[in-house]
Image 1 (cartoon, rainbow over the protein chains, first blue to last red):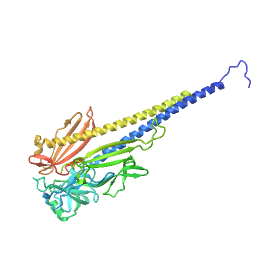
Image 2: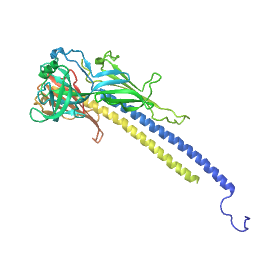
Image 3: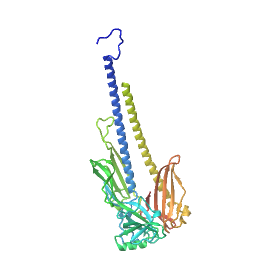
Image 4: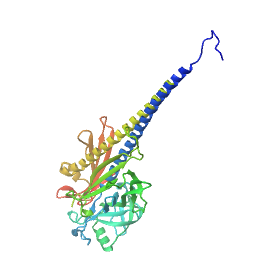
Length: 306
Length: 139
Protein backbone atom coordinates (compact mmCIF):
# COMPACT_ATOMS: atom_id res chain seq x y z
CA UNK A 1 0.00 0.00 0.00
CA UNK A 2 1.55 3.40 -0.86
CA UNK A 3 2.30 5.71 1.99
CA UNK A 4 0.04 8.67 2.23
CA UNK A 5 2.05 11.89 2.22
CA UNK A 6 1.65 13.92 5.38
CA UNK A 7 0.58 10.95 7.58
CA UNK A 8 3.04 10.10 10.41
CA UNK A 9 4.58 6.57 10.28
CA UNK A 10 3.54 4.26 13.14
CA UNK A 11 5.11 0.94 14.37
CA UNK A 12 8.65 -0.38 13.74
CA UNK A 13 10.64 -0.78 10.62
CA UNK A 14 11.94 -4.20 9.63
CA UNK A 15 15.46 -3.25 10.67
CA UNK A 16 14.29 -2.12 14.09
CA UNK A 17 12.37 -5.32 14.59
CA UNK A 18 15.36 -7.45 13.60
CA UNK A 19 17.71 -5.57 15.92
CA UNK A 20 15.19 -5.92 18.72
CA UNK A 21 14.75 -9.64 18.11
CA UNK A 22 18.51 -10.22 17.98
CA UNK A 23 18.92 -8.40 21.28
CA UNK A 24 16.07 -10.38 22.85
CA UNK A 25 17.53 -13.68 21.66
CA UNK A 26 20.98 -12.74 22.96
CA UNK A 27 19.60 -11.76 26.37
CA UNK A 28 17.44 -14.89 26.49
CA UNK A 29 20.46 -17.03 25.69
CA UNK A 30 22.49 -15.48 28.48
CA UNK A 31 19.58 -15.80 30.87
CA UNK A 32 19.06 -19.44 29.90
CA UNK A 33 22.74 -20.19 30.41
CA UNK A 34 22.64 -18.53 33.81
CA UNK A 35 19.53 -20.44 34.70
CA UNK A 36 21.05 -23.74 33.64
CA UNK A 37 24.23 -23.23 35.64
CA UNK A 38 22.30 -22.19 38.70
CA UNK A 39 19.99 -25.12 38.40
CA UNK A 40 22.94 -27.50 38.21
CA UNK A 41 24.61 -25.88 41.18
CA UNK A 42 21.39 -26.10 43.19
CA UNK A 43 20.90 -29.74 42.26
CA UNK A 44 24.50 -30.64 43.08
CA UNK A 45 24.24 -28.87 46.41
CA UNK A 46 21.01 -30.65 47.28
CA UNK A 47 22.54 -34.01 46.33
CA UNK A 48 25.65 -33.22 48.32
CA UNK A 49 23.61 -32.24 51.37
CA UNK A 50 21.62 -35.46 51.07
CA UNK A 51 24.84 -37.44 50.78
CA UNK A 52 26.32 -35.86 53.90
CA UNK A 53 23.10 -36.45 55.84
CA UNK A 54 23.01 -40.03 54.69
CA UNK A 55 26.56 -40.88 55.70
CA UNK A 56 26.39 -39.00 58.98
CA UNK A 57 23.11 -40.64 59.96
CA UNK A 58 24.57 -44.03 59.06
CA UNK A 59 27.57 -43.55 61.30
CA UNK A 60 25.36 -42.39 64.19
CA UNK A 61 22.84 -45.21 63.86
CA UNK A 62 25.41 -47.97 63.55
CA UNK A 63 27.47 -46.62 66.46
CA UNK A 64 24.35 -46.30 68.59
CA UNK A 65 23.28 -49.85 67.74
CA UNK A 66 26.64 -51.35 68.63
CA UNK A 67 27.73 -49.24 71.61
CA UNK A 68 25.98 -51.36 74.26
CA UNK A 69 27.17 -54.76 73.04
CA UNK A 70 28.99 -56.93 75.51
CA UNK A 71 29.73 -60.50 76.40
CA UNK A 72 28.86 -63.11 79.00
CA UNK A 73 31.32 -65.16 80.90
CA UNK A 74 29.91 -67.26 83.68
CA UNK A 75 32.71 -67.66 86.23
CA UNK A 76 33.32 -71.00 87.85
CA UNK A 77 32.67 -69.35 91.21
CA UNK A 78 29.06 -68.79 90.15
CA UNK A 79 28.51 -72.51 90.67
CA UNK A 80 26.17 -72.86 87.72
CA UNK A 81 28.13 -75.56 85.97
CA UNK A 82 28.41 -73.52 82.78
CA UNK A 83 31.69 -73.19 80.88
CA UNK A 84 33.56 -69.95 81.56
CA UNK A 85 34.14 -69.45 77.83
CA UNK A 86 33.06 -65.90 76.95
CA UNK A 87 30.02 -65.61 74.70
CA UNK A 88 29.95 -62.39 72.73
CA UNK A 89 26.87 -60.43 71.71
CA UNK A 90 28.44 -60.32 68.25
CA UNK A 91 27.20 -63.56 66.75
CA UNK A 92 28.57 -63.01 63.25
CA UNK A 93 31.20 -60.40 62.52
CA UNK A 94 32.20 -59.88 58.90
CA UNK A 95 33.39 -56.78 57.04
CA UNK A 96 30.00 -56.29 55.42
CA UNK A 97 27.72 -57.89 57.98
CA UNK A 98 27.22 -58.03 61.70
CA UNK A 99 24.66 -60.10 63.54
CA UNK A 100 24.32 -59.20 67.19
CA UNK A 101 22.18 -59.34 70.29
CA UNK A 102 20.70 -55.87 70.46
CA UNK A 103 19.67 -54.68 73.93
CA UNK A 104 15.99 -53.81 73.97
CA UNK A 105 15.20 -53.23 77.59
CA UNK A 106 16.08 -53.53 81.24
CA UNK A 107 13.85 -54.50 84.11
CA UNK A 108 14.18 -55.35 87.77
CA UNK A 109 12.67 -58.41 89.37
CA UNK A 110 10.03 -57.77 91.99
CA UNK A 111 9.33 -61.34 93.01
CA UNK A 112 11.60 -64.32 93.48
CA UNK A 113 12.40 -65.70 90.00
CA UNK A 114 11.47 -69.29 89.28
CA UNK A 115 12.44 -71.61 86.46
CA UNK A 116 9.01 -70.96 84.92
CA UNK A 117 8.81 -67.18 85.11
CA UNK A 118 10.58 -63.92 85.85
CA UNK A 119 8.49 -61.03 87.14
CA UNK A 120 9.66 -57.46 86.38
CA UNK A 121 8.30 -54.34 88.05
CA UNK A 122 6.39 -52.26 85.50
CA UNK A 123 7.21 -48.94 87.16
CA UNK A 124 10.95 -49.40 86.73
CA UNK A 125 10.95 -50.99 83.27
CA UNK A 126 13.40 -49.17 81.01
CA UNK A 127 13.20 -50.04 77.35
CA UNK A 128 12.42 -49.01 73.83
CA UNK A 129 9.31 -51.20 73.89
CA UNK A 130 7.57 -53.88 75.90
CA UNK A 131 8.96 -57.43 75.78
CA UNK A 132 7.77 -59.69 72.96
CA UNK A 133 7.39 -63.44 73.40
CA UNK A 134 9.36 -65.72 71.05
CA UNK A 135 11.32 -62.66 69.86
CA UNK A 136 13.24 -61.41 72.86
CA UNK A 137 15.62 -63.36 75.03
CA UNK A 138 16.45 -62.71 78.63
CA UNK A 139 19.70 -62.35 80.53
CA UNK A 140 19.08 -62.63 84.25
CA UNK A 141 21.62 -61.26 86.69
CA UNK A 142 22.72 -63.95 89.13
CA UNK A 143 24.44 -62.50 92.14
CA UNK A 144 25.28 -65.49 94.29
CA UNK A 145 27.20 -64.19 97.29
CA UNK A 146 26.24 -60.50 97.74
CA UNK A 147 29.69 -59.78 99.14
CA UNK A 148 31.52 -61.11 96.09
CA UNK A 149 31.68 -59.70 92.61
CA UNK A 150 33.75 -62.58 91.28
CA UNK A 151 30.73 -64.90 91.25
CA UNK A 152 28.39 -62.49 89.45
CA UNK A 153 27.07 -63.61 86.10
CA UNK A 154 24.31 -63.16 83.53
CA UNK A 155 22.42 -66.29 82.57
CA UNK A 156 20.32 -66.57 79.41
CA UNK A 157 16.79 -67.81 78.94
CA UNK A 158 14.21 -67.67 76.19
CA UNK A 159 10.92 -65.84 76.59
CA UNK A 160 7.91 -67.95 75.67
CA UNK A 161 5.19 -65.67 76.98
CA UNK A 162 4.55 -62.14 78.20
CA UNK A 163 1.62 -61.17 80.37
CA UNK A 164 0.56 -58.61 82.93
CA UNK A 165 1.07 -59.71 86.49
CA UNK A 166 1.82 -58.39 89.92
CA UNK A 167 4.87 -58.09 92.11
CA UNK A 168 5.24 -59.67 95.51
CA UNK A 169 4.10 -56.34 97.00
CA UNK A 170 1.07 -56.19 94.68
CA UNK A 171 2.44 -53.55 92.31
CA UNK A 172 1.87 -53.99 88.55
CA UNK A 173 4.41 -56.23 86.84
CA UNK A 174 5.41 -57.75 83.52
CA UNK A 175 5.51 -61.52 83.82
CA UNK A 176 7.87 -63.31 81.46
CA UNK A 177 7.39 -67.04 80.95
CA UNK A 178 10.86 -68.46 80.45
CA UNK A 179 12.48 -71.45 78.81
CA UNK A 180 15.97 -72.63 79.75
CA UNK A 181 18.41 -74.80 77.87
CA UNK A 182 19.26 -76.89 80.90
CA UNK A 183 16.97 -77.48 83.86
CA UNK A 184 19.87 -77.84 86.28
CA UNK A 185 21.34 -74.48 85.23
CA UNK A 186 17.91 -72.86 85.52
CA UNK A 187 17.36 -74.18 89.02
CA UNK A 188 20.81 -73.05 90.17
CA UNK A 189 20.45 -69.64 88.52
CA UNK A 190 17.07 -68.72 89.99
CA UNK A 191 18.19 -69.97 93.38
CA UNK A 192 21.12 -67.52 93.29
CA UNK A 193 19.26 -64.60 91.68
CA UNK A 194 18.25 -61.89 94.09
CA UNK A 195 14.85 -60.20 94.06
CA UNK A 196 15.31 -56.63 92.81
CA UNK A 197 18.17 -57.62 90.55
CA UNK A 198 18.33 -56.63 86.90
CA UNK A 199 17.25 -58.59 83.85
CA UNK A 200 18.15 -57.47 80.33
CA UNK A 201 16.24 -58.21 77.16
CA UNK A 202 17.76 -58.75 73.75
CA UNK A 203 16.63 -59.10 70.16
CA UNK A 204 18.90 -60.57 67.51
CA UNK A 205 19.47 -58.01 64.76
CA UNK A 206 21.58 -57.91 61.64
CA UNK A 207 23.18 -55.04 59.77
CA UNK A 208 24.22 -55.95 56.26
CA UNK A 209 25.72 -54.28 53.23
CA UNK A 210 23.82 -55.54 50.22
CA UNK A 211 22.80 -54.73 46.68
CA UNK A 212 19.23 -54.18 45.56
CA UNK A 213 17.57 -52.49 42.58
CA UNK A 214 20.87 -51.50 41.02
CA UNK A 215 22.27 -49.78 44.11
CA UNK A 216 24.13 -50.77 47.27
CA UNK A 217 22.60 -50.21 50.69
CA UNK A 218 23.16 -50.75 54.37
CA UNK A 219 20.18 -52.74 55.55
CA UNK A 220 18.82 -53.78 58.92
CA UNK A 221 16.62 -56.66 59.90
CA UNK A 222 15.42 -58.45 62.97
CA UNK A 223 16.63 -62.02 62.84
CA UNK A 224 14.49 -62.87 65.85
CA UNK A 225 11.37 -61.84 63.96
CA UNK A 226 12.47 -63.47 60.70
CA UNK A 227 12.30 -60.16 58.84
CA UNK A 228 13.52 -59.52 55.32
CA UNK A 229 16.31 -56.98 55.12
CA UNK A 230 15.20 -53.38 54.61
CA UNK A 231 17.38 -50.48 53.47
CA UNK A 232 18.50 -48.26 56.31
CA UNK A 233 21.15 -46.06 54.72
CA UNK A 234 22.01 -45.52 51.10
CA UNK A 235 22.79 -45.48 48.36
CA UNK A 236 26.34 -46.49 49.15
CA UNK A 237 29.28 -47.09 46.85
CA UNK A 238 29.44 -50.43 45.12
CA UNK A 239 32.03 -52.95 46.24
CA UNK A 240 34.25 -52.52 43.25
CA UNK A 241 37.91 -51.66 42.86
CA UNK A 242 38.70 -52.71 46.40
CA UNK A 243 36.41 -50.01 47.80
CA UNK A 244 33.28 -50.88 49.69
CA UNK A 245 30.34 -48.76 50.65
CA UNK A 246 30.23 -50.20 54.18
CA UNK A 247 33.06 -51.82 56.08
CA UNK A 248 33.27 -52.96 59.67
CA UNK A 249 36.52 -53.70 61.45
CA UNK A 250 36.76 -55.63 64.71
CA UNK A 251 39.65 -54.62 66.96
CA UNK A 252 40.87 -56.07 70.23
CA UNK A 253 42.21 -54.16 73.23
CA UNK A 254 45.55 -53.62 71.46
CA UNK A 255 43.77 -52.19 68.41
CA UNK A 256 44.76 -55.23 66.38
CA UNK A 257 42.22 -57.29 64.43
CA UNK A 258 40.40 -59.42 66.99
CA UNK A 259 41.02 -63.15 66.87
CA UNK A 260 37.59 -63.94 68.29
CA UNK A 261 34.38 -62.01 68.70
CA UNK A 262 34.67 -62.14 72.48
CA UNK A 263 37.98 -60.28 72.14
CA UNK A 264 36.44 -57.35 70.25
CA UNK A 265 36.66 -54.08 72.15
CA UNK A 266 36.19 -51.56 69.35
CA UNK A 267 34.37 -51.62 66.04
CA UNK A 268 35.46 -49.35 63.20
CA UNK A 269 32.72 -48.22 60.84
CA UNK A 270 33.56 -47.09 57.33
CA UNK A 271 30.86 -45.60 55.13
CA UNK A 272 31.32 -44.49 51.53
CA UNK A 273 28.16 -42.78 50.36
CA UNK A 274 27.27 -41.78 46.83
CA UNK A 275 24.76 -39.28 45.51
CA UNK A 276 21.43 -40.72 44.46
CA UNK A 277 21.60 -39.05 41.05
CA UNK A 278 24.61 -38.03 38.94
CA UNK A 279 25.07 -34.29 38.96
CA UNK A 280 26.77 -31.74 36.71
CA UNK A 281 29.65 -29.99 38.29
CA UNK A 282 30.05 -26.38 37.13
CA UNK A 283 33.26 -27.18 35.30
CA UNK A 284 32.40 -30.62 33.98
CA UNK A 285 30.40 -31.26 30.89
CA UNK A 286 29.20 -34.72 31.86
CA UNK A 287 27.31 -35.75 34.98
CA UNK A 288 29.28 -37.48 37.71
CA UNK A 289 28.39 -39.34 40.92
CA UNK A 290 29.80 -37.63 44.01
CA UNK A 291 31.17 -39.71 46.89
CA UNK A 292 31.80 -39.01 50.56
CA UNK A 293 33.79 -41.18 52.93
CA UNK A 294 33.26 -41.18 56.70
CA UNK A 295 35.10 -43.42 59.13
CA UNK A 296 34.35 -43.63 62.81
CA UNK A 297 34.86 -46.08 65.64
CA UNK A 298 32.80 -47.08 68.59
CA UNK A 299 34.08 -48.52 71.84
CA UNK A 300 31.80 -51.34 72.95
CA UNK A 301 31.02 -50.21 76.46
CA UNK A 302 30.18 -53.62 77.86
CA UNK A 303 33.29 -55.27 76.47
CA UNK A 304 35.72 -53.03 78.27
CA UNK A 305 36.23 -55.19 81.32
CA UNK A 306 37.86 -58.60 81.15
CA UNK B 1 10.40 -8.23 25.97
CA UNK B 2 14.08 -8.51 26.81
CA UNK B 3 13.39 -6.78 30.11
CA UNK B 4 10.66 -9.28 30.88
CA UNK B 5 12.96 -12.20 30.11
CA UNK B 6 15.73 -10.81 32.29
CA UNK B 7 13.34 -10.14 35.13
CA UNK B 8 11.97 -13.67 34.91
CA UNK B 9 15.48 -15.10 34.85
CA UNK B 10 16.45 -13.02 37.87
CA UNK B 11 13.43 -14.27 39.78
CA UNK B 12 14.22 -17.88 38.95
CA UNK B 13 17.91 -17.48 39.78
CA UNK B 14 16.97 -15.78 43.04
CA UNK B 15 14.71 -18.69 43.94
CA UNK B 16 17.46 -21.20 43.17
CA UNK B 17 19.99 -19.28 45.24
CA UNK B 18 17.50 -19.15 48.11
CA UNK B 19 16.97 -22.92 47.84
CA UNK B 20 20.71 -23.55 47.86
CA UNK B 21 21.09 -21.31 50.90
CA UNK B 22 18.30 -23.15 52.65
CA UNK B 23 19.88 -26.52 51.88
CA UNK B 24 23.22 -25.30 53.24
CA UNK B 25 21.56 -23.91 56.33
CA UNK B 26 19.77 -27.18 57.07
CA UNK B 27 22.98 -29.09 56.52
CA UNK B 28 24.85 -26.83 58.93
CA UNK B 29 22.16 -27.32 61.57
CA UNK B 30 22.32 -31.08 61.13
CA UNK B 31 26.05 -30.98 61.67
CA UNK B 32 25.68 -28.89 64.79
CA UNK B 33 23.01 -31.20 66.17
CA UNK B 34 25.41 -34.11 65.79
CA UNK B 35 28.00 -32.19 67.77
CA UNK B 36 25.50 -31.27 70.48
CA UNK B 37 24.37 -34.89 70.78
CA UNK B 38 27.98 -36.03 71.20
CA UNK B 39 28.57 -33.38 73.87
CA UNK B 40 25.42 -34.44 75.72
CA UNK B 41 26.54 -38.08 75.65
CA UNK B 42 29.98 -37.18 76.97
CA UNK B 43 28.41 -35.10 79.75
CA UNK B 44 26.21 -38.07 80.70
CA UNK B 45 29.27 -40.33 80.78
CA UNK B 46 30.99 -37.81 83.03
CA UNK B 47 28.02 -37.96 85.40
CA UNK B 48 28.37 -41.71 85.89
CA UNK B 49 32.12 -41.37 86.35
CA UNK B 50 31.67 -38.66 89.00
CA UNK B 51 29.16 -40.73 90.99
CA UNK B 52 31.39 -43.80 90.89
CA UNK B 53 34.55 -41.86 91.65
CA UNK B 54 33.14 -39.63 94.38
CA UNK B 55 30.71 -42.05 95.99
CA UNK B 56 31.93 -41.21 99.48
CA UNK B 57 31.29 -37.52 98.81
CA UNK B 58 27.57 -38.25 98.67
CA UNK B 59 26.76 -39.85 102.03
CA UNK B 60 23.04 -39.87 101.26
CA UNK B 61 23.61 -42.56 98.61
CA UNK B 62 24.87 -45.19 101.00
CA UNK B 63 21.85 -44.60 103.25
CA UNK B 64 19.25 -45.19 100.54
CA UNK B 65 16.55 -47.74 101.22
CA UNK B 66 15.82 -50.38 98.60
CA UNK B 67 13.75 -48.95 95.74
CA UNK B 68 14.55 -45.43 96.92
CA UNK B 69 16.06 -42.89 94.53
CA UNK B 70 18.33 -39.94 95.22
CA UNK B 71 18.94 -37.16 92.73
CA UNK B 72 22.27 -35.39 92.80
CA UNK B 73 22.57 -31.68 91.93
CA UNK B 74 23.00 -30.67 88.32
CA UNK B 75 26.66 -30.15 87.53
CA UNK B 76 28.14 -28.11 84.70
CA UNK B 77 30.77 -29.69 82.49
CA UNK B 78 32.73 -27.22 80.43
CA UNK B 79 30.76 -24.50 78.68
CA UNK B 80 27.10 -25.30 78.23
CA UNK B 81 26.92 -29.02 78.99
CA UNK B 82 25.53 -30.32 82.26
CA UNK B 83 24.73 -33.65 83.81
CA UNK B 84 22.33 -34.75 86.47
CA UNK B 85 22.75 -38.13 88.05
CA UNK B 86 20.20 -40.14 90.00
CA UNK B 87 20.89 -43.26 92.00
CA UNK B 88 18.35 -46.02 92.60
CA UNK B 89 19.10 -48.69 95.16
CA UNK B 90 17.99 -52.04 93.76
CA UNK B 91 19.07 -54.48 96.45
CA UNK B 92 21.35 -54.44 99.47
CA UNK B 93 24.39 -54.23 97.25
CA UNK B 94 23.15 -53.23 93.79
CA UNK B 95 22.57 -49.74 92.47
CA UNK B 96 21.40 -48.23 89.19
CA UNK B 97 23.17 -44.97 88.41
CA UNK B 98 21.40 -42.90 85.76
CA UNK B 99 22.94 -39.82 84.27
CA UNK B 100 21.30 -37.36 81.93
CA UNK B 101 23.65 -35.19 79.92
CA UNK B 102 22.25 -31.98 78.49
CA UNK B 103 23.67 -29.47 76.04
CA UNK B 104 21.99 -26.08 76.17
CA UNK B 105 22.37 -22.82 74.29
CA UNK B 106 23.20 -19.47 75.86
CA UNK B 107 19.56 -18.88 76.76
CA UNK B 108 19.34 -22.22 78.53
CA UNK B 109 17.20 -23.92 75.89
CA UNK B 110 17.91 -27.62 75.53
CA UNK B 111 19.75 -28.51 72.30
CA UNK B 112 20.41 -32.19 72.98
CA UNK B 113 19.93 -34.71 75.78
CA UNK B 114 21.29 -38.19 76.33
CA UNK B 115 20.46 -40.61 79.13
CA UNK B 116 22.73 -43.47 80.09
CA UNK B 117 23.07 -45.71 83.10
CA UNK B 118 25.40 -48.05 84.88
CA UNK B 119 24.65 -51.01 87.08
CA UNK B 120 26.98 -50.94 90.03
CA UNK B 121 27.54 -52.82 93.24
CA UNK B 122 28.90 -51.91 96.63
CA UNK B 123 32.21 -53.54 97.33
CA UNK B 124 34.56 -52.76 100.18
CA UNK B 125 33.12 -49.34 100.95
CA UNK B 126 33.12 -48.16 97.36
CA UNK B 127 30.81 -48.74 94.42
CA UNK B 128 32.10 -50.27 91.21
CA UNK B 129 30.41 -51.15 87.92
CA UNK B 130 29.35 -54.75 87.49
CA UNK B 131 32.05 -56.91 85.97
CA UNK B 132 29.86 -57.61 82.94
CA UNK B 133 27.09 -55.70 81.18
CA UNK B 134 27.12 -52.69 83.46
CA UNK B 135 26.65 -49.97 80.82
CA UNK B 136 23.15 -49.01 79.68
CA UNK B 137 21.78 -46.87 76.91
CA UNK B 138 18.52 -45.47 78.28
CA UNK B 139 15.66 -43.70 76.55
